[in-house]
Image (cartoon, rainbow, N blue to C red; front, side, top):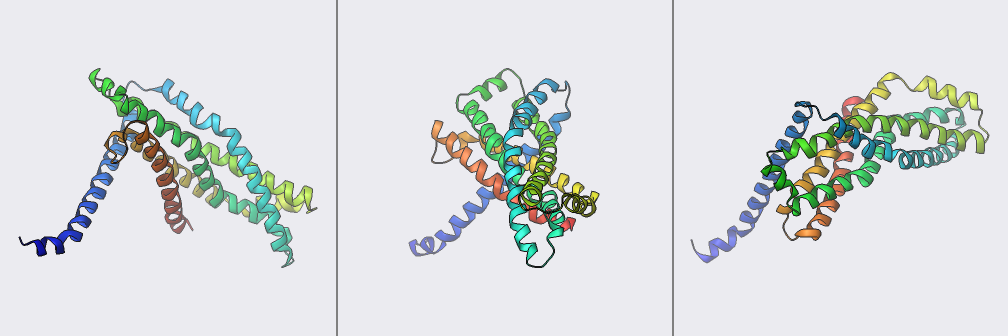
Length: 268
């Protein structure tokens, strides 16, 4: 092959290598996630490890989730009150706050906050175990590292995300009450009547479906990035763990927003 031909084909070869790399990564992620999910149910059941992860992912996130939800609800109450006043419909504030939180903001912001607090920690923990050869040691002792490390985190996420989303919704509605009723003088009976009459079971179910999908995505993406830290190009050791942690948070947040749009399209 002549040098001219090689020069002309170089961009196509680079694009082909990039595409093959993406396909390999997608395939590895799919297998990794499926193994992590299936091994949750393998015996003996790892109840104590799952409870430890529920405490780490769920219980220790309660305070930050409640704080963010309170101020999100207050901002929503404040902004929507003045917007609705322009149309003489400030009585609909409860409906607007509740539906915004239950359908969209609750699941999405809860997932992003857990990604920042617990997801990054998952990646760093697994990444350090990888570069210090602790995962290889598990293999040597005939302990399945995916079952031992990944499955409990995935199970705990599937349990914790919906519960934290429900907490976010309730505290956010209280935040809207504080801004709209306590600070701006809206009738509290109208506020809660609107909340009760506008939110139906379909809204709550849709929010929980989103939170379960986000739990799967966040836990598997963060674990995957940590588990394969040693295969990253351009970063080894502590630097590789830092790059994996950054990638895990960014990729998780992007996929949460993409999947949120797709699920909303089907649920509406």
